Image (cartoon, rainbow, N blue to C red; front, top):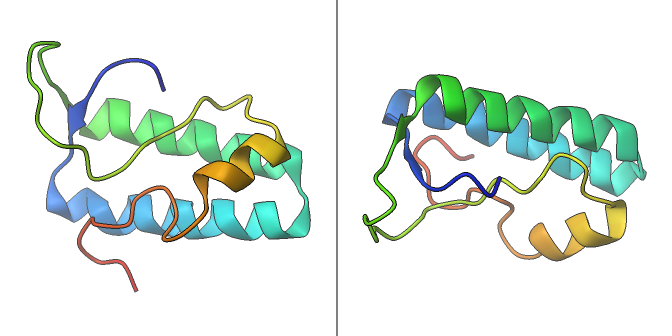
Length: 92
């Protein structure tokens, strides 16, 4: 998002993982508008449910929420491997 790091409670992990899964599916379908909508939802969920960390905090990140205006080609690079949020609890 370019807005720093957030700490998100484990309970929100399932919601974020579901949005991540849906974003991967939109990417596979070539649905750029749907992908961007889901990326906005990911960012909004992190902002509303997460705790913004101080910029000096260098904790490792479990995931990355890219900008919501990401093109399909750019998104393919982000989704290589395990998706945007591979390590949060509740991923199935």
